[in-house]
Length: 263
Image (cartoon, rainbow, N blue to C red; front, side):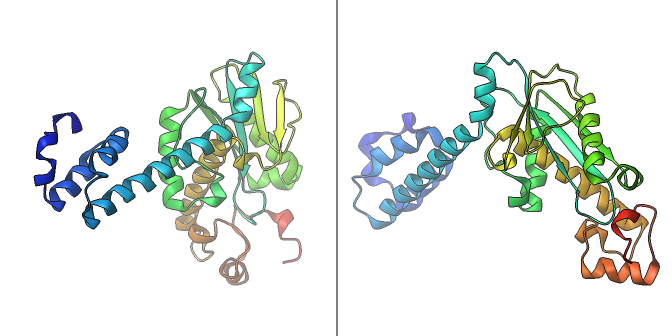
């Protein structure tokens, strides 16, 4: 776009025209824009240049962050892995609903701007990233264990069940599995447990988002089936409105009885 600009006419451009140009150019032309207009002494034009400089700084910081998030995946590739997966779960603590696990296989050196541990993201951001992850992933799988299985096996073992079910949904053969702090029994894929992995690995972060959005949407649906417990907002966790619902209406078919022994 800037290549069509007549440099001899730059001084004749009004501030609004320069601003409109800055709004239209792609990010890769920001530096060229800054070089062209940096000599313009008008404060408004300098302000536009500063805005683009800050955008480039943010972009560089995000690229460096994404490089760090790809560190563990790249270590797997260096060791000969072809497909690297990240796995995470959500829903260990709630009083109701399932525990949900997700596993995601991303392309090498994946660049998904804004991706992070699902707990650090707004619902709106998680929903947007969920769509991007599902569309860009090489493969993904979702597994869960319901409240009956949680009561029967305990929450830790039910979590492992959900994780194994997620892995069974994959079509590709994973060479390296990155987990958020746990080592899953009964899985013969080489595993790399990472403490706080959902904040350190792009694949685990992606899995945490897929698991979180999946479970949250389930709890919103359960709220329609079992009104009065606040499931749409509390997602089954032990909030005051949830306890009030239990006191008023009793337990539902999705409550974890083993979590409610004192009620």
